[in-house]
Image: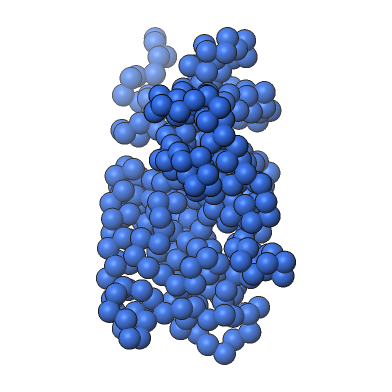
Length: 391
């Protein structure tokens, strides 16, 4: 008598136990730091080399191209003011980069950082100007918490829809970006937000007690780097601890690597999707909070300035590792701060900075190309961002 299990009773979604054990063993193996550091470094080198060729193609000499890069370096780290501007530009990029990187780790593609940043910033600015008479050590934490909550709410929506209906997070987050942008435009024209005596959409200024204090204003009041940098670095430490030192982080990575195997091991894939998107939204909301409380002191239309989308590039360059994200954000912050000096001193258009950033991402996203150009013997794994459209 045959004891073979009928096909109708077999579960095609669950991997065999042997493959499941192999999968979870691979999750706990050490990171190949040689590959993780080498590929982004060579991607930056290749982007800078091609940048030189582009400058020369416009009629400039090689020495003029080198002068442009020297101006870029001087504008990013050549003085205390330059360093301050680099750190100011890098602060929101750390947080939006962490937001995207965390989602990548769970197999999700969070393109909604822009909307989450806007909603978080609006929550924070409302608490910043509407509450008066509180000391800074109460008012500032309340405003920061408001921004976290606002971003988390905007992240919860795609996470919930993904978990409960299977709606793809890419489509949902893109649409939520537009909704957030128009909601900001709408609310900035209401009496609740709009500054008295103004017809243009600009919010009231936040109270001084909710401002993120400057870190170097004692040296020079014009230095803009603020305490949001410390908040961003603490967030990076927290996300690194969460991902690599906690059971929850292990579940995030397991679901991102293989949802079927994670489900076979007893993990709730739907709960993971929701939690990941809530935390990712909170991080992006915190980035918007830093902008309105530390740089702008108010909200204006489009105050996100594309930082949510820039976070995707930062996460890719940082290989979705919180430590790598911090260094990638510093690089992109330096390019942003130094680009203005390069334009003024070397007469090179600031659009070149966007070209260099795009080239960096192209090379990071194609590690096999870097390996072929430099004849690397180190095995290069392909970069997987998220699961397919049908997942």
